[in-house]
Amino acid sequence: MPRVAVIRFPGTNGDLDVIHVLKNVAGLNAELVWHEDFRHGAYDAVVIPGGFSYGDWLRAGVIAARSRAMKEVVINAEGGVPVLGICNGFQILVEAGLLPGALLPNDPPRFITKWVWVKVNDVKTPFTRLYEPGEVVSMPIAHGEGRYFIDNVDEVRVAFTYFGDNPNGSIASIAGVVNYEGNVLGLMPHPERSAEAVLTPRGFVTGGLKLWLSLRESLRGGW
Image 1 (tube, helix red, strand yellow):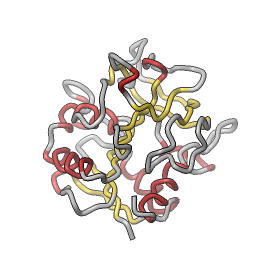
Image 2 (cartoon, rainbow, N blue to C red):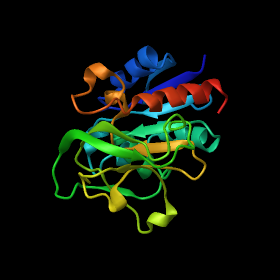
Image 3 (cartoon, rainbow, N blue to C red):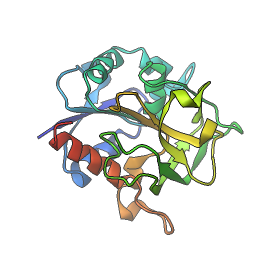
């Protein structure tokens, strides 16, 4: 069975939620890995969950991005291994240079936690293959530095956009991006918190479920 590593940094707080969904919802073999113990080549996919790695000192994700673990993740990513960064994990991927652009303080500057609607723009990734092109789903957000920015939006492969309300001022309402090769995805909304109906408020949908099922299908199909 494919092995998925969920990397824990000091300050990570979404790791056990991801482990639960991978194991109990998607039926995958997920392992919680302390960042100092992570090595490339041992896993078939990598997830960097949300939280506040190193307390968001200096800038969200910047310290974790310079860790040995991320050097190992870069090797995995360059070898085609699926890598997912959620919220703070997205910030880490950007700071590590695996994804383009920058994640800036929300506009207006405040911490936001709410459910939002997002549109799936790219279904040609190991994490989005089961979505319909243009499908609109709901997921929760919880961040203070989630405003995505890039000088030229034509230079980025957009995976998700906010639909309707743009909660943080991201350029072109971008909620998630993927690298050119398609195997590295970062998104600010939390798909692990929207994968089960019991956690989904009335009026919303379990928008994260297809992401985890897409990963399962991709790994079993030999992505």
